[in-house]
Image (cartoon, rainbow, N blue to C red; front, side, top):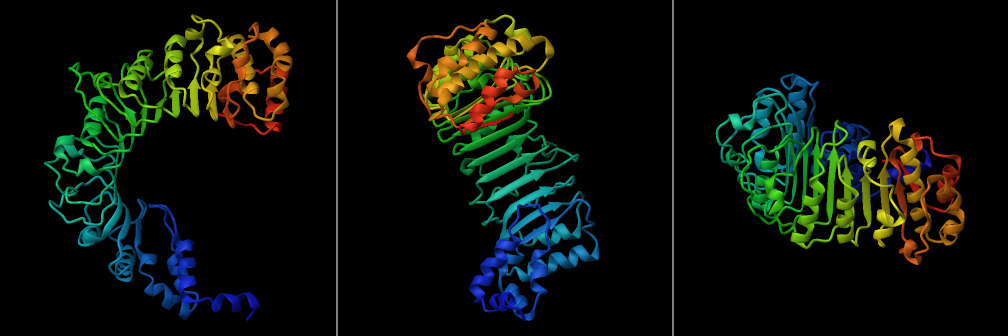
Length: 448
């Protein structure tokens, strides 16, 4: 026996337990047989593993596995037995009703985190789920919950705080849940009316994400509501959204600090009227955004500047600039029209320029202006301290005058810059050198 093996075998059981739990730690839905392998090493390790109930508390059944096979059944029974009464974490990709599901339903009182992917949703009625903290439910290509009767299965879950509905459509009124106690909410394929209904129900929600949203064409009057604790809101769209729903003009989010709007396959998935909606929401809610991401939004420079001027405390701003069709109607930005100048506390800043060849000239001008501001915001950088001298040549090329305003370098806390398609738009060599110099001086430059 080697000395290293000797050291392992003299470890006390308590240390081994911590090592075992570290080895088997994984995300829900990630398959691994590490706990079985640990128990096969030697009789002592097997004894420690069998007494460590959390080691066996994660059960994963993937789509390629046959839930009716003898191997899957026996392995599931083994894990249920060895986990004792410890809370269970389940990932089940089971497309049809099976005896395996029936077996796991009998242990519902032990469920802690559940991710269920199925095309055969069966409600068990009032079930005691006293340990359930997180629920992810996806019906895949099966019938929507709206097609079912009222669902009461998840209503008796006093600890439930995280809810995710994936790739399903449903009627919120038919799905009984302790909505009021949810802290984290994720939903997919909703129209904007359903999005606002969900936020109205979740009075304690802190973070909310809505993927693949669609337009609300009900043309109804807005319903005012307040989300007191909502601090982070993310909305993504696969197709163009004309508004964020009528309720956006009357809702109040006083705790909102992170707002993210991300477009999908269309170049501009959000219409130009959405930025003024966001501005009025900020004013009405009296909130203080620290992180703003606008990706795939058509807007005018005037509307964007009005929004940015309200949010002096932004530390992260990621902006996708207008396409050539929009840019042709607006003048090239001056140094006072970019977030780096308006936001003295900014630490992370991103701009994505249009990448089509026809607007290369406009892109170069904007790149020159943005570089001026970035260089003035880099702490301890020779570029920052001698900004006006270094950037003169580039400004002559871009036809952008340099202001003598001493406040151009307000704030020197910039740490990271995202420049998107900047590298693919034939950046002039002088600009390339300036970007490399910024990197050499400690600024992190990445792509959106």
